[in-house]
Image (cartoon, rainbow, N blue to C red):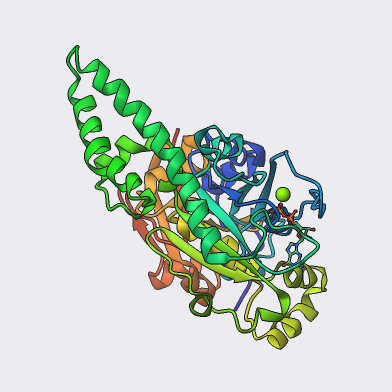
Length: 392
Ligand SMILES: Nc1nc2c(ncn2[C@@H]2O[C@H](COP(=O)(O)OP(=O)(O)O)[C@@H](O)[C@H]2O)c(=O)[nH]1
Ligand SMILES: [Mg+2]
């Protein structure tokens, strides 16, 4: 595999040149940035939420055995991506920027507080939930229910979400019913029908809304309510160190329904792995019968859960991943890099990461024909290198 020519492969005025001028803070940390992925780490107290948050985001929030946490913490995790790492090897760029996921560690939800629970309210803002479930036994760390029961806790946490949603939906239905005295708009009628015929009955049957199969219009109608049980869910089962090897999702008896992902891990083991130098991590993982740290799987599952994919920009200055939704057309994807690129979009040059690695340079891809010219409506695929030509 040959290294690219010494000059940057991108001439001035291209996507790459623009991208490197934008301070990172403009792209990460604002919800107005089009492609932001934010997950709320949640669950009952003393399940390991803050420990997981610290590991994911290299933070040092307190995880005191006895204290009750009241503050939310916010941190960013880099998405591990072997494709991007291979491109980094190829280009040896000055700057390397993987995709990121934002995690918010929200203090434990208290049972039975419903829609008024402040901690549940904070969850409204996030795109998906990470429910950390305690499956480790430790007499020193009090379980709020007095015993460890994973299946019970998964179900009762879902119920908290369902009750909070039901309160909100009932208030809205009541309001619409009252306005019926004056006539409802067409949109309000559709909304009322959706709430009364589909959403409320599901909640009354104690079914989380993430299991509903709604069409796009109905999904849009519901989006504004930020209903908690409708958000995609990542279950993180925090098992005891000694039972990690024999804890498969099957043996734990956990069933995952729609819009749900599952990771089983032991946080103390993850802490040990994180403290080892990279060359010793592999051996330790093999000893445990693992192929990769569960933290990596957690971050990747977070990304997948939200239907996000990455495309890449490459060059000697920077190798970078950009986050977009699946099915995003090239022109909109260009906007993830900078609004000028979307506005002045002319065309995109696209090549799959493996093909670029095989060929060694974009120039070589151009010669062999693996570099394609695509128009504004082309749907960008996961793992493609996209080089935007634009004019503003
Ligand atoms: N024995 C044991 N203790 C754990 C495990 N995971 C977390 N802890 C401890 O449990 C306590 C509560 O953890 P924390 O992350 O603060 O839980 P949170 O209340 O859900 O945020 C801390 O003292 C952790 O060190 C585990 O797998 N085994
Ligand atoms: Mg905590």
